[in-house]
Length: 280
Image (cartoon, rainbow, N blue to C red; front, side):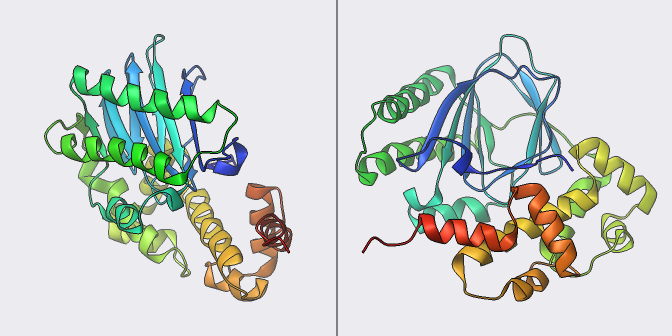
C-alpha cells in the first residue's frame, strides 16, 4: 500500500505549524490525507487536482483548505508551478473555526483576485519568517495570522469558485459519502456500489483510476486514522480500539497500522504518551 497519510510530525513544527514553498515535480502524487489542516495557495502556474472525488482545474491564485477528513491529489501541473503550503495543528485555531471548516459541505477551494492573493503571500511569508527564526512565539500571535488567512478564504470562496468537472453521476462522491459514514462497520463493495448507483466492478476500477488508491486502501486509511485518535485520546485496550475502528481482527489491525505508521498500535501509543508526558 502506498503511504497516503502524511502526519505533521514528519515536519519541523515547534510552533504547531509548518509552512513551505513547494514545486510539484514528481510525475504524479498519490491521493493522500493529513492529520492537520492544510492551507495551500498556487502562487504560479496551473495544475489539476482531485478533492474528495471531484476534479478541479487550478489557475494561478487558486486557494484551498483541506481538513483532516479530506483527501486529494495533484496532476497535470505546469513546469512553472509554485505552491505555498501551510500545515496547521488544529489546536492553534478556535474549536468553533475547526468545526466550521470540517462541517462545510462543499470542497473548500476558490480562486483569489491577484491583489488579494498577494495579501495572502504576505501573511504566509510572515509565518515563514517566524518559523525560521529559531524562536518560540506566543500561540496567540500565530493564531491571529492564521485566522486572517482563513477569513480571507471564507470571504472569497463563494464568489470566486474554481472550475470543476463533475464526475459521471457523482459516482465517487456518493461512494465517499457512504464510506466516510460507515467505514467502522463491515462494509462491502456491494454495499458501496449500491449507494453509488453503479456496477461493483466498474466502481472498483473507476474509484482506483480517479482517486489513485483502491477502495480497500481508502477504507483502511480511514480506520487507521480513527485508531490513532483513540490510541492518543483514550485508555481503551488495543483490542477494543481495533474493533471500534472497523478492523475485523487484531492481526489485520496490527498489520495495517504497522504498514502505514511504521509502528505497532501499542508502540504508537507509548511513543505519543512519552512525548506528551507532563514534566515532574
